Image (cartoon, rainbow, N blue to C red; front, side, top):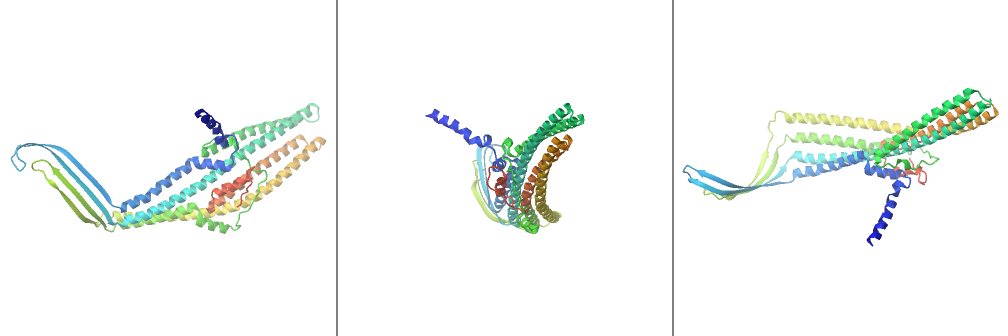
Length: 448
């Protein structure tokens, strides 16, 4: 029975890992790998978790402190002088113990520290959300770069095949005396140049795959789902850039982190000013002493009191720290202002990048269709003698370049769409799902 269960388990294991090895991975699969394995994102996650401890530490300062100490000693005493200890040798044990309790009653710095820790946590949460959005951008960009590199390889291979056919035609035409040797040499040169381009394209593909693996930690980049043949282009909605700027003011994570940083600096000013005020602490202690010598003490003591600490003069250190905190506050405000302006510019740029990329994609699509018709016409013209082989080579160059430009521009459109949502603070995992609709075998389509 045990052998049978083990056999079933062995047979089922490949089914569980088949998604990574047998099937093509889509963008959602790749993003899940990135979310679980990307060092940058996991580092920021750990920093957020570390910041969460600040509140617990601030609360601890407001709570009682209890400590206990105890000591047992074996003693040897030889007294040569007559006194209350008596003359002679004594060997004895002594035992002491003490418990101390202190409770802050009034300490403004501690309360400001608690408030400051809450803003520090808010900042850490905003930075983690920003890191998550950056992870989306980096993952999608790396995924698209692999697709672009693969498409470049495929197009260059197709171009090389077309060059090879023309080279064979040129050699044949030269041998039968229908074309000069220059056309054969030109075809050979173009073929060699395309071969070099293919080698470069393959190297670029390997590098793009390595870049994606750097994020996901898995070498699965050669099994990615490609883009669907027709890419639907959609303008930003709403179509008013000012509305996107309003989104950014309220939701941009980098801006939210800068706001929290200002609040942290304000609380630091309050903390430094609080050092001018007295602190009041309640104290209590209990101790016992047990000495087995002839002169030793045996008994207990206890006390309850209030300790007041009033700062009078510290050499100007407190005033200096207050000024320093004010300067840091002003610096934080300037960082916020700079971040606000940068976000405003980023929203404006990405908004019009989306529009510009739509226009460029549509224009290049027309050029691809035109160059394709031109290539077909010139190929027919070469057969009837109205065009030369060099004309065909030039037409091929223009056609394949237009196709590569189209792929590149379509990927640029997708990235500008994501970056607009990033700048506005709207980018989230659902955008990855919608973008996944642009891939083959997936029905959903993204929307702005």
